[in-house]
Length: 221
Image (cartoon, rainbow, N blue to C red; front, side, top):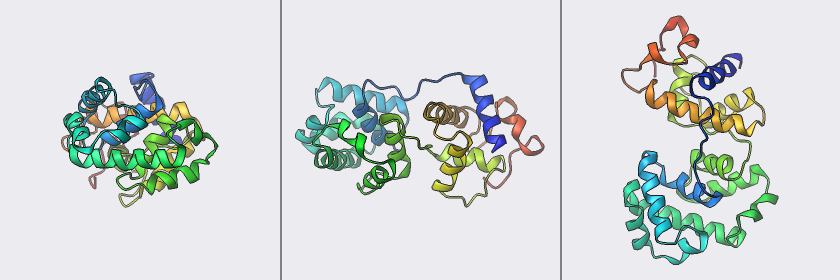
C-alpha cells in the first residue's frame, strides 16, 4: 500500500495534473470509453470530431443514425463495425434506463450502475469503470494492461491477479479520492506508453524505478 502511494507521488512529480479525460460533457466520455478499446486516443479524437460534425454525438443522435453510417463516422478508431454495434447497444440501454437523461443516473448506486453497464454486451470492466469514474465521478479505480504490467513488474501483485483485485488494491491506497484516481490512472498510462513497455522497458528513465526490486523489473511479465 505504501509503495503504491509512493508510486503516485513519483508520477505526480514527473507529470503533474494530466487533466484526463478530455471531453466537453459526460456523454462524450461514455462514447470515447467505447471507441478507445484496442486503439490509441488520437484515433478516437478523430472519430469524436466526426460525430460532432455530423451532429449525432448525443443519445438521441446515436439512436437515430443507422449503424452503417455510424460505422463510417468512427472508422478512424478501428474495428468500426463492431464499435458501431457496441455504441448502438449502449445507447439503447441508456435510453431505456434513463430516457436519454444522464442526470437520472445520479440516484443509482455505483454497485448497481456498474452491474447494469456490465450487462451491456461489449462493455467490460475497464470500459464500465472508465464511464463510472470519468463521466459520472464515481469512486472506482480503472485498471488497464499498463496497470497489470507495472504492478507485476514491481512485485506488488502476483501475475494471476484479476481486475477486481487490482482495482481494490490501487483504490484503497487513496480511499474514495476521485481526482487522485483520475490522475493516477492517467499517470500509469503515460508510464506504460513511454517507459514500462511490453518489450524493452526503459527502466533507467522511468519515474517508478526507485520502487523496483533490486532496480530491475521482475521477469514474469
